[in-house]
Image (cartoon, rainbow, N blue to C red):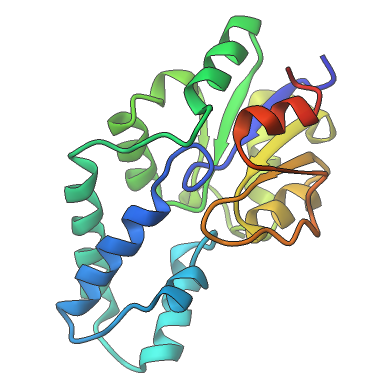
Length: 212
């Protein structure tokens, strides 16, 4: 096989959570008299919470963003209780990689508590021994640190890793880490600037990259 490991982003790549996050964000901000528009939400996709808060503060001015963040997380958890849908091909790809004995990891901009909750509710936690979250790194995506740390914890050369991402921010991070990058479109149109392969879904992307 041309790769020693496969590293996945979580939100928008394995899990169809970005649409849920838009709804939960709209509800949370509405409690504070604010409106989360689709363009504003899309500017937050793929980035960490610290950077996201700075974007919201620049857009809305001074507000109690600790309270907004807490309300948004609460809304996220409530929506997740009904189950978190997988992206097309996610379970099939992970199952096949498990059968092949291919090491896998998560590299996400989510905080650990949120990532673990999503993995548990989506029943994908069993597939991953290595989960790198925003709490694990100093520099979040688009810096390469999350992907480099995931490769390190797997004990593999990052240049021998295949990375799956949906966002342009995440693709830039994986590319900077020296990995082969498959970018699968979600809510944000991919530029392809930092992707070796652009795909409509995970399985077709895996085939393009020679993984399957």
